Image (cartoon, rainbow, N blue to C red; front, side, top):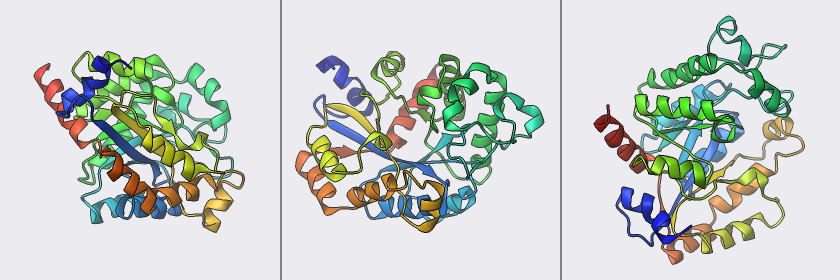
Amino acid sequence: MTQSQGSQTNCLLGYPDDARLLIINADDFGRSHACNAGILRSLTEGVVSSTTLMVPCPWALHAMQMLREHPEISFGIHLTVISDVPLYRWGSLTSREKVPSLIDEAGFFYRYERIPEFLAHAKLSELEVEFRAQIEAVLATSLKPTHLDWHCLYNGGRADIFEMTVKLAKEYGLAVRVFDLSTGEALQRQGLPTNEHNVLDSYKLDIVGKSAWYARALRELPIGLSEWAVHPALGTPEMQAIEPESWQARPTDVDFLISQEAREIIEQEGIVLLSYKPLQKVWQERCSSTT
């Protein structure tokens, strides 16, 4: 990234050109009790600055109750149309008859390994109906989300899904997570702040030596706005049953995110932790001025 590119979002958000900004967003709030407990701890005791809610999941009501009890927590909506583990499934908020292209033979959202098949035939109109249902379900509780992102789908998985999501964000006064630099630059040219580096997905990190990797990544954080999509959860029997082969990825996230080391490095490096609230504010201002 050049200096001019690096300073674009900093400028839009009112920070110096050389500021290093970081959103640490805990994905999957509402997915399970273990996720809810681990995310809340990472938000209240650690360095996590934002979370995103999976509205169709079994523990979403519990997560929304936590958000009501902690109004200081900044959260977005983790638009969910993929059910990613074999024996723990969820489906649409919308009746299945209205969104048949989103539902598999068993009556649930498609599994992770079938994402290419899902993207090949999911109808944009049905996706918009379901995305709206998930947004409206949160707004109906009087909670105030800050942004939209997607569960298991980078930039929505298709260009038309991404564009439709941006349209919804503008309509509802929300920001959007952007996973890669080139897509972000297109929005920045509209005066809309986005993260300026590829989003870090903590599930792609090796659990061995993860804390050391995080520490190094903080020290090497580039100028501009970065985002880490982390996945904290407690390593309870529930989590081990849901993800028997990958559950350790989540408590190892918690370990670093609540550590004194994480706080100290952020302070030493002068990193500015942000939620999506300042981005949302600019998105609202820009989008209201163009309508």
